Length: 147
Image (cartoon, rainbow, N blue to C red; front, side):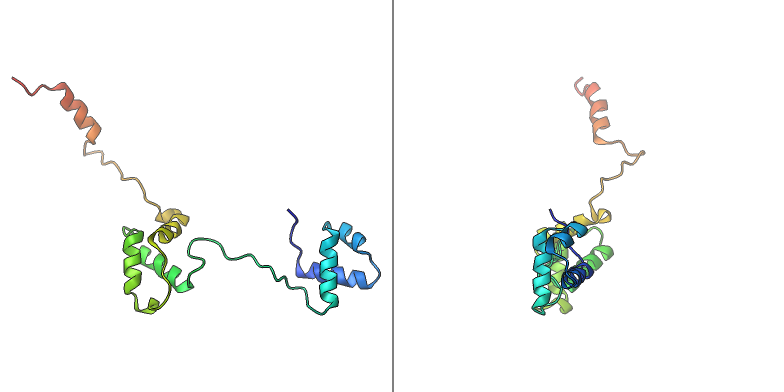
């Protein structure tokens, strides 16, 4: 895949073209395609500037929602670390500052929480003083209850 050019490079393409450089020469010197150089030179020649009309949309869980929603989910999770996505969604519905805003589904909230390792579910720690279920079964299996 071709790399994206910077705005400074695009201005330089046009400047060099105005000073007699061919599209092929300019493309070779910058390591881009001839079509790329031609596109930006023609665009600037029409006075349209060097800003790309193509932008990379924001990615990640809840990127399509209002920023307040994302912040509120993370704030609620920090205050209530044992709450899961369903509880967080129910609380979001009660928040006055989010009234009228589109709210994410519990699955979307779960994806957001999974992006941060500290929000992932951790296995329960084994208490060395408490026997686990496997050791109880093993000790009871050897004992006979009939007399």
